[in-house]
Image (cartoon, rainbow, N blue to C red; front, top):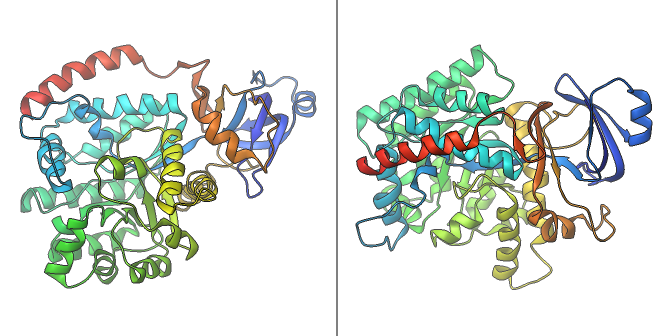
Length: 441
């Protein structure tokens, strides 16, 4: 396919902007980039997609997502409203995940993945939990990613909170799926070893998980010091911070995603940097749960790898980016900060992280990169260049609709029409399933 007549945002090292640009795709990969005229003359007989002047850029990447949270939308809690982070977990999320069955897992993934297509997110790193349906749950999620055509990195959340039987089953589900990924590699799927958080993971559990993951050459996906209670629990029971505990256990490293990292110390920041651990910042979730603000300026200045996720708030990243920018400015009390740092997390760091874990060049428009692309119906009202790109993304493109999406060169949406699924039919099935889940809840 040849996509032409577009303003191309390459998101390469120079953030180059190519007016009236075109790209040629063959075998799921970007093969050539140039002017519309030159490539149309070179490839006259190839299928063409006229962008009509829209912005063409790499699809966005969500570094920390909980697809299963979808069926909580609108749910009513009979208990008093949760007043602390731990109460939110106990009264909402840990009750919801126990109410999920196979059908609920499937539909709670289908709905947000459709939203991901509509919002321009082509890759999601999901962190799954369903204690009532553990074995095979990652296969259900994998099948949904295959059906929608999106790229996904999956794991199952191991925890001690539901007893030794479910803890063991969760460990085995991670092992089974990771072994499957090694034996039968899939172009759209990979895995990590899922863990909940320090305060629900005993020493024996950590040790068993590290031994299992080591034999599979797998990193971890874990919540780290999201709430202050996690840090306090760790200091009380283990005499150290969560970062130090995970470092001593062998959890941290260049293939591990540590979500949140809100309550960490200067020493913790240095450990994250030395181990090259990936930190996933989730600004809207942190605000929604009132857990605090991570020391982002210090983390970035000292070279910690920091990407961006949504923690289940939604699959889309533009709202996360805009929130991150405003929150960064607000907390630093410096209007000069935020824009470049947040753009860097989402559009520079997330692609590097995805490339590290998928083993492919993702999230950039370069020759040899995967053709994971979106067309945004944005026609710049002012000049757009590599030097002012941040302003256009934050204050223009962030409010413009995604028109077309391709993943590995396959069209998932064109002209805002989902091509791979029946959106209304899935929503109807999800409503029926949600009613049953709410009864169990």
